[in-house]
Length: 489
Image (cartoon, rainbow, N blue to C red):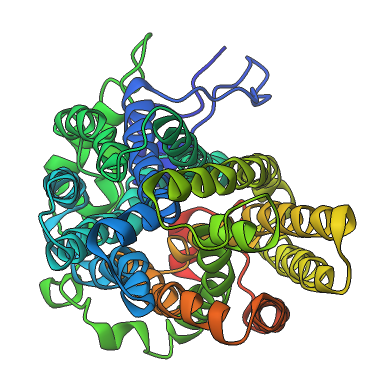
């Protein structure tokens, strides 16, 4: 095989990354294995999404025991589930946006340090107020990870496989959710202690420390370095990123038009709503907000809803043993349903670069509406029929949300903005989305008690349909296009 370009060629960062090997007659070879540095960056980004899924979805199982230990009210139930999501809301913009100024790598390390610190604090919480504050801190770190992990991958990977690599890392959120549910069930099966929820969270401390150490070993993204006019550092980072055996390239020149300092620093919030970026900001933010209303509401409270609608639980559980028994029944059902999150993300990984982000997002919203409608209609039946409809509806919802809006909104938000506001734009979109998640998490326990499951589910059917419409109206397709091409357009 021959090299796709001469090493003396002056190419952009993305052109160097996008090079593919070719046969002597010039025919491209489809295989494009990632370098060890690209693989390491991907794996460390995937770990962050794993921790998010584990912590957020474990909260639904931990909640009954937390409520028992601290004797909290229904409104305080909402504070526990909303605290980490509120932290994500603030952290995605406040901390995630800082990677546009201080660098992707710096914030990639800082967020994991914060996550580990606050995870330990959750496990040692002496009272309810301290627990809520620690969960909020966890959310700050996870929020920073939303834009930072995405741009770490997207700015270091080939355009041809960018979608599937970003989404395969994002898919570890589903694996984390399944892991958190499974760990919760195993711990409940082996103890009747009200302190069991602390051990659930403690399982993440050692892995978090390992990930923190490994994040020190990665490079800064060449795209960001060039945006700051740090050309020599960008060359060195690109060479490290593309280090392979046999070595190619061994030297390189980067095509770069110097950016004025004021333009490089032009990354304030107003820039997101400038005529050039307004449509991208709305596309990245509004559908994500609408899907988070359903994804987090259903995801966190699946154990609670199942406890109320299926299973042989004690209606007025007062002892720790009764609470643990009810929690185990709900956790077992939630684990069955959460498997569809993983299946959905696998389909998203396979299809995002082939079918495009927008078609999958629209189809996914429609599938979410259908699944929730089936679950809502179960109230007209009883017995096994109602159970099948609830499980089937939630399974369809989990599959559709992960093949569509839950995956595609995350992917699109990190692709549609120019490099100098890419993290801030993705962070703003994540923060705006988490307004929906926090509202749902806080209000769900209250609304479940006041208006019932059926009306609540029908409301989410409406928001899902609206998400499909908004996506179609604002559509910007990014599949198969390099970040530089998208930015120029």
